Length: 263
Image (cartoon, rainbow, N blue to C red):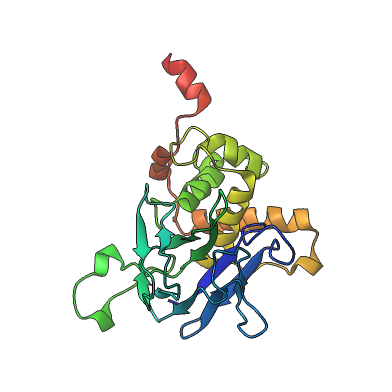
């Protein structure tokens, strides 16, 4: 595991500046990030502006093969939700140190006095999967997958939707746009609330963490060119290496024209 990505979405840390700004942290094995309200005497990497959250509320620490969550609160439990797991979650009780978190994509949720909770996201992109053809023998001789993707995850559905026109041999001029991906997945039970911003985040995750695609720096290209280039690069890698194949189309909801013919 090469590390994790911690993301505090814009506005998730509280209502006032500077807490409303989005924050993204990249942590490698042995590194840590503290979270809480923070103060000059207790600096934190993730600032969460709510009176019910301690100055130093907890800590994330990265190990070689997973990440851990410590809860420094004496009174409140924290939840670690698996957004891809149909309600699956862990409860980290007060004063629990180093609770191991197994999810690839997690949402850490802290209770507040408001009508909404405060949360941030943790991506652990390098969960390693063995090659199904080489699971026998000693560990040192086993082969791991170059691209470790979870085919049950929402990001994989986004990838399949991006690749669909090529797999159906429609000879497309361009990859599907973000709004087109949202519309294509809307009928899927796991994607009913999928937003364009979420699709963009999944594409970023695929490009930067799962498929490790090197792209031009934002200063070298326009924002739109960079976004289009990222989608095209993701599709090219997925098809070239057979990460997405025709059988994966069954993961997508039926197309509108197919449903119409069925009626």
